[in-house]
Length: 117
Image (cartoon, rainbow, N blue to C red; front, side):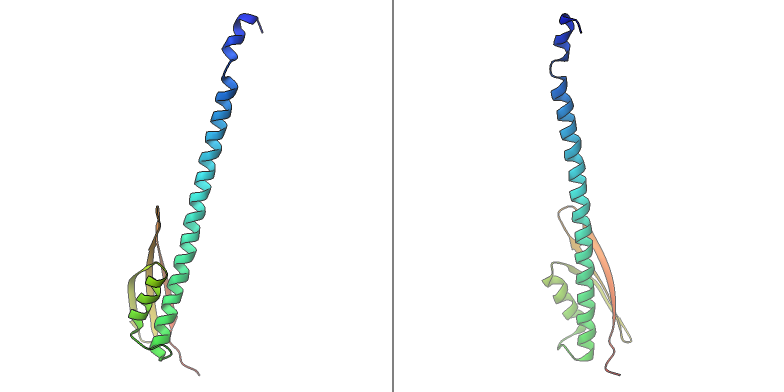
């Protein structure tokens, strides 16, 4: 390369490195956001399951109280809100929602209140 054109190459390596760092940072941010969403999804489903079981146990008399109120308490104690609680015959249907900084996730669960056979 001629000596007069060498000054054109100054700084290009730094620019490429800065671009690589920005690309890697964006990728890792996206990966972190996807992980946060997945974790919130799993936790919300767990809260829905717990609330449905608590309501079913209340219907059986294992836990004192009102089924949907107990489900609401379980959901609130785990950082979620009870969106709906429906009891048809011996089946309890629960829907809870949980909100994070960027995401809002909903989960549903059903439990059957069956005594010992």
